[in-house]
Amino acid sequence: MLFSFFAASQVFAASNKVEQTDSLIQKWLAIEQQRNAMINDWHQQEPLLKQRLILLKQEQAQLELNLSTDSENDGEVEKKRAQLLKSQNSMESDQTLLEKSLVDYFQVIAEIQPQLPPPLFNAWQKKLSAAEFISADTTQKLNTLLELLEQLNDFEQRISHAETALMLPTEQGEKEIMVRQLYIGLAQAWYVSLDGTIVGRGIPEASGWRWQSDNSVDGEVVLNAIAMIERRSEAQFLQLPISLTLNETVANK
Image (cartoon, rainbow, N blue to C red; front, side, top):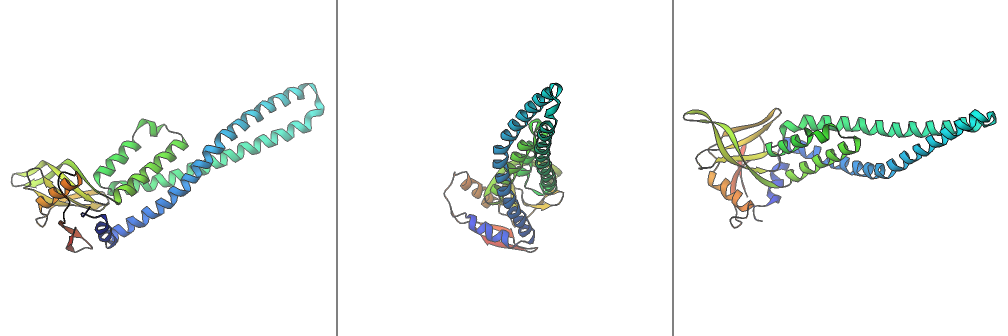
């Protein structure tokens, strides 16, 4: 597609804010690989450990029964008890480490979520507020974390669009206006009202996205770009005002 992802990646590399986001994504991708390895290991070890624990408990019960009838088994019973305690402690230690890691990662998730493009913010919020997640066990929460990171990486690498209502200034005062939005990655977005008369851009901030009027935005170009994404029109070169640093410039798309 001529409306290329390569050009978008060049734009993001030039922005300090996006460089920080890209660095975070790379760290998260490394975490994802580690988490995948941990998941696979946990899936393999968890049933074995649980089965072993059941067998050890059964054996302990049997040994305690034998103890009541034969005092000569004292040493063997204590030995098995020690083995059982060691297995329990090891499993509890692994579980504690994983749970602590998840707390740290979800704290980062909470810090970055308000700065995400609204469609991605809403997708994350849907998962994080679901009853299934709130009551989920450690393994399920780990899977959710990986899904969130995959969504983040996917959104950062593509061009996407959405339709929503924004509170925008008009000649009659601030009104709720239905708009179509065009996103390039995580930090560039434009909007145009359905009738094409109101245009502007989105600016990511720590507390959320701010939408402001910008007459340098060509509403027809934004709508044409969305039409190309939806495959309702042929691919072509378009121009959009891209923010490379703190200054505004125009980049060929």
